[in-house]
Length: 304
Image (tube, rainbow, N blue to C red):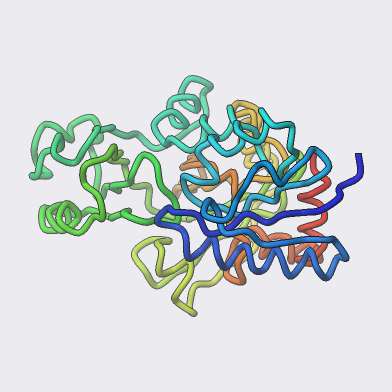
């Protein structure tokens, strides 16, 4: 059935609202340039499901819980309204980092070791405490919310001062977190579009890791096409496509990884609604294939 109108849902109520607003504006402008009848809707305040039919199409530009937890996808599926990206089940698998990492571990996909707590009040406030023994030996740890994105409330911890600073600085300590071992070498990302891997990018930042500032604020963050041997390139692609299959993803997504100094790959997480701002990784990777932003948006809409 031909698409009558494309609605870009953006904004949302999560901590990633500002990023989502920017992604949505870029996508909306691209759709206009492509000649689609399109509109922008700030979700959920201005979204009325009764205004849509199966002839409509929803482009989900909602980062964070509103667009990546699976609840919106489930709602649209029940109403028979087509939308961009992965379905409800895949989003549920990837949004929760603990579930995602367990699925990877069960399927022999390397991922850094981790400990999950239901709130920070369950964690020890001394890095030498036996609580952290499952992650030893380590030089650094990362503290991450189980359910959030854009590196919000993510902290690199090297000592007790870092640990206590993270505990007091996080936006919401009374939610689930993971403590994850740090693998220091290269930060990588691999976009997947309609079942094929786009060029892997290596991320260079002056920050201690690819955090919110590095992603959206700092101008010195650099991206470079990752140079690998054909053998390692094939291995990386196989890992990412296996993650795609296990999680049940479709359309478009982004796999974030680390590569250690022995050239081993470790999958960190999967993003089912990647950023589409001027700083974002997905369009930057597409550019290296001479795939313009407009071409990318068109492919996302046509992806199966």
